[in-house]
Amino acid sequence: MDGAELALEPELESLPDAVVAAMEVRDAWRKRVAEQGEGLEFLISDLARWKPGSAVTVAFLDGDTALHQDIADATKQITDACNIELDFGQTNGGFRRWKTTDTTRTADIQVSFDKGGFWSLVGTDSTDPNIADPVNGIGGGPGQRSLNLGGFATQKPNRWKGTTRHEFMHALAFHHAHQNMRGPCEDEFRWEDDQGYVPTTDARGTFVPDSAGRRPGIYTYLAGPPNRWSRGKVDHNLRTVESPDVIAGPFDTDSVMLYQFQAFFYKTSPSPCGPTGNGEDLSEGDERGLRLIYPHTEEGMADIQTRAGAALDKMGNEAGIERSPFEARVVELLTGLVA
Image 1 (tube, rainbow, N blue to C red):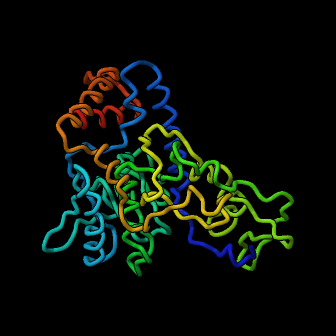
Image 2 (image 1 turned 30 degrees about the vertical axis):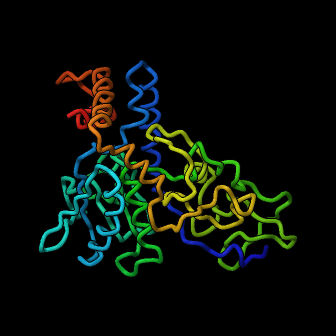
């Protein structure tokens, strides 16, 4: 392997550190609450989802009507597979829009094209004002971006439909497939440098193999440009985790939620962690997951309402209770699912 094989890639998908820090505090609190008694397990597995059968509203900050139409059309593959609607507010005059000066949130999912990279908050975090980076205008509060498709307004990238579907799947509560606890990626990734690797960079500052052909590991490589990630950030974005809002199905190599990393990321070739899908379309597994989380059947919807109701009873549903922002948010989400 030579340095050319470690070509500088686009910045990997990641949320701002301030957003991640707020999520970690919230998740730790939810986990502690859920461990306090039977009936509160719902806090661990289900609060990221929207209410099945509901219309999740979407608004755009920038971009023109033609681009907005492309995004809406691309997401139809998602909504055709499950009992949820993405409401883009389309009228003869165009699509719903939001502004950074808004004092109330215009839509559940607020899309922008002006920030760098591709990313989205997960599920109902998109409307959680506690999960935010106010400095950069990212989060669940008024006038903040919850989903970004960087550069689309100038030129859509190759396989843009797959990128759009990937980010909107995040917005509907799906996580990356490479972090699935049932998958092989944790053991397949080359986390550390080859033994004896001497840190070597090219003219762009990218870590490349040294003069003896020894390769940088993922931690070293992602510490360089354009990502400049700490080990903690690498762990958060790549390692298998049991997040409080993860609903894990079987590992699916065809999933639109599985990234194709450079070959040196993997220990073997072909890697069992590598994607086999086309990167554009939902897999059968993706569609199965959507139907599980957003069922059409009365039985499936009733089960969600029953479990949400039990958790709400445990939290205490009396009016006038003084609650922390985290508690108030949980009660709000549970109430919405029960109604």
